[in-house]
Length: 188
Image (cartoon, rainbow, N blue to C red; front, top):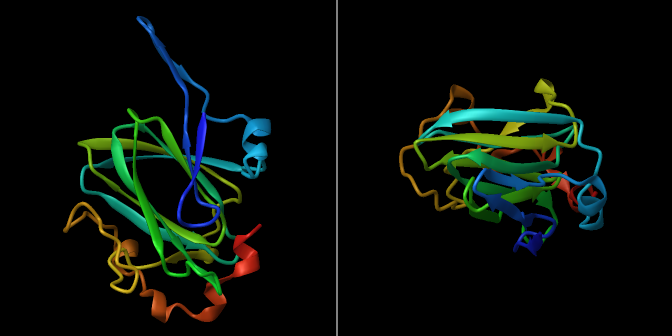
């Protein structure tokens, strides 16, 4: 396993070791002690799996209050995965990091509390898995516009398929201060 710090402090790319033979393959996707040693909390409380068709963009989502850290990976297919720093006072506030996650590259992305998250399916379909550090809480759910020009994400597709919720996301500059994070909140 190889852990890479991205340009957003706390957002980690984890390249998993995959063992293959003529019967198939095996990889370990979670090990409480090993991940805790990397600074990833071991108190995940909810696992989610989504299936999406090519061109589907989900995000940019976060919860505040009740923020979630997420450990995400693709079980089948490929996505362009993105994290956006929403911690007021952070030198990287409003900056984004994106990378391809696929069932071929066996890479996870850890997105800590204090960040918005989204992904765009670039293969015919994708099965996407994520562990969450807190339960889903509908009243805490927030959506940042996927195409916010101040964030400037370079999505690999111009016209994604969006839900009504994602189409109604708000610009970063219009998010009320109470729904952003302080630097210390995102450092948990």
